[in-house]
Length: 369
Image (tube, rainbow, N blue to C red; front, side, top):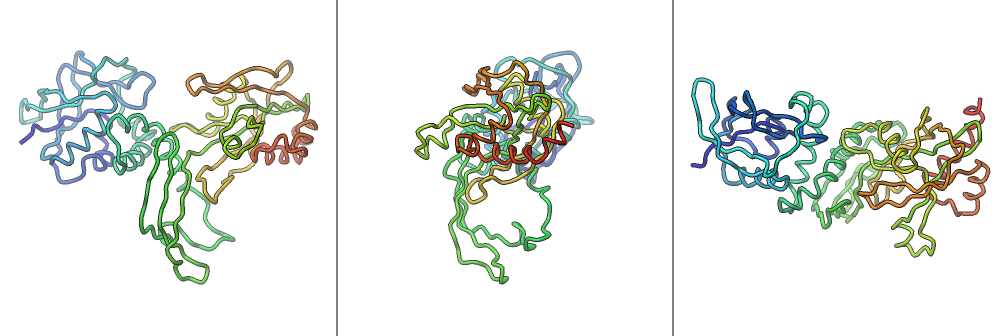
C-alpha cells in the first residue's frame, strides 16, 4: 500500500479536497516538524519552507490510484513533486508519508492563513478545480490554463447571484435546461462549449434536442473617463481581433477603458487597475451605467459599465497597456461632442462605448453640477 499523503495547504479545505481526491479515505490532523507554511509572495496559494516550528495539516490515508493520479495532475503542473517526509500524528508518533513540495525555491510571504484563503479564494478554487479535473489536460496544460479557469469560476459564482425573473418566465437553468451531450472542443485563454440540449418552451413542453455553441470568457468591466470641468472624455484605441476576423479594413477600435475582472477582485478594483494600466490614469468617483450581456446569442461575456470622473487636462496620446499581455493602447482625449459625432459617423462603433456615451449624454448636466 502506498504511503499516506500529507496536506498542508489548499487541499486542507474539505470541499476542494473532495473535488480533487474524492471521498472514502481517512483524514487525521498531523504536523511536519522543521517546516513552516507561508503565502507564496504575491500568490493565492501556500508555499512550504524549512524553518523552526512545524507545518500543521492533514494526513490522508486510503487513497486509491485514481485519487493519487488526480492529485498528481492538480499539483505537478505548478511545480510541486512528491517527497518522502515523516509527520507527527497525535497519539500515533511519527508516520512515514508523502507530501507535495516545490521543486524550486519560492519566495514566502506572510504566514499562511487557511481561513482567510477560504473566505477570499475557496469557492473560486473549488469551482475552477471542477473544470480542471473534468477536462482532458496534462499537468502542464492545466497549470497554463489555471488562471483563466479561475476567472471563469469567479464569473460563474458572480452569475449565480443574478437577479430573478419579474417580466421573464420563471425558467431556470437547473430546472428547465437539460444537457444531453456536453462538448469542450477548445480551452485556452478563452474556451468554447458545444452542447446538445433541450430547453423549456413557453407552452411548458421541452424543446426538441438542439445544438448550441458558445464562446466562454470571463466577466469584464468598462469605464469611460470623463472630466466635468473640460466636458471631455478619454477613449482608448487598440487592435482588436473581432473586427479583423470580420473583414473590417480598419480593425483598430475606439473604446472605453476595459478589462477582465481578476479572480478575487471587485469591479471597482478592476476598473481602477485597468485605468492605471491602459492610460496611467487615476479615477475619482465612479457612476454606474449598466450591467449586461453584450452578445448573449453566442458569447458568455458579461459587462459592468461605468463613467469615471478624472482630470484629463494635458492628457492624450500616451501609449499604455500591460507588457505581459502584449497590449499596445493609445489614449485620446476629446470633447464630448466630438465623441458623439464619431458615434454618429460609425468610427466609434463599439457597444460599451456607444451605450456609455448615451448614458453620459443624459447625465452629464448633473455631473457638471
